[in-house]
Length: 501
Image 1: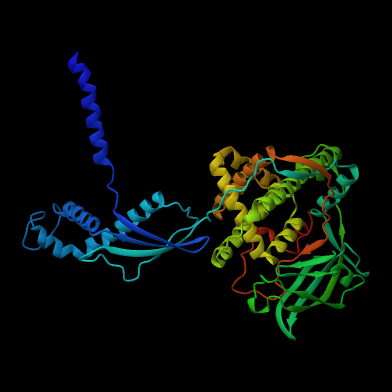
Image 2: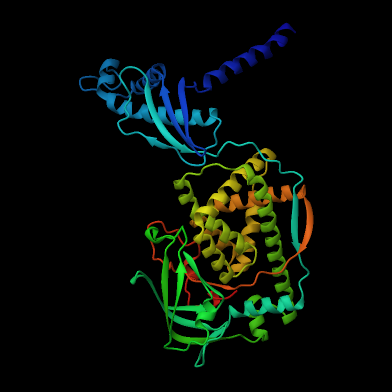
């Protein structure tokens, strides 16, 4: 019995010794962290001489049996000779190991949360013959902040029972995607299309040009860097051969940096006026656009799509109110470099969210241009929102699951008319799965916040599409331009399907 009683203790001790033996030995690091800004850390790391010697000893010990030194059989050379012959190679090897192991240990021990890869300053860094090794790096981090109170918020919620008139209006917009542009000899009216050559000038010097652009006469023409108000009125009554001019004030985020905030003249040469001819709701057409058995089934689908757009508006409206409350004390300074890199990602996220919510390309492009015109401000706001929502997600253990990805991709596929498999391949190819993941997690957090909020309903009126977006910078392109966040296949501005949704 005594043997039986003591044997488990011996086994446990042996297992414990084995675990200790297998556990990697921690480095004796001296780490100094400076904070140039709320989202930046400058880290100085000193690796002890003791650790350097330990890594050197392990490296040389591992190569003694296979080291080749002239005059000695393989594995028989004295260690001093091996060290002298392979010093440079071994130093390079352990330098890399020390750096990687140090960074791993720092990431586990430091309190900051990295949001990017470290920028190492390795120029001239060598393993010293004596004394410690010191290296430095910069890293972007999530700002440290006290969590705002997010439970029990008061939120206004837009509500609406969609009418037959709402459905009819949406149906007309949807049919426009499949319509045909037909030449028209008369004067242009609101809603007509104009084929135009566009030239923009600053101080009499041409800065940008777009030939044969197809634009619809709406209240506003939205460029990538500014908007021309009263555009429909400007071109009203125009015929082929006419010329019209307007002015656009460029935003503070315009791609052409020297012209930011400046006013440019926009000249239009009208080449042709066209009317939009809508398709008839024949049996073949209904089958082609979605295998609808009848016009009534199509209208039911449109009503469901309007409901999705209302849900998007409810989420957007709630998000604005929630984040406005959460951001009241978020006065962190975000580095310009971080904002510049994140601008394109925020644009991708916004476009993806609009697509999954059932909006058409014309509405998406208008919103996209609006974001471009205020990229720094909108990106800063979105980043601050993300940091807070990410903290809530961590504390509440909220994450994205595979089923969430499938649902998002299916909704995007429904709107684009492509297969979910193709949509997923496009997202993966463009490296946007992390954007989709963030979108899913943030939505889940917002749903949690809303589940504990107090709501007050208010009437909702669907937003009227009064802005025509064009993929052109009125001030010309510059080095700071944000990449276009849309499928290349959908960028042909002449296609009617891309002019209406």
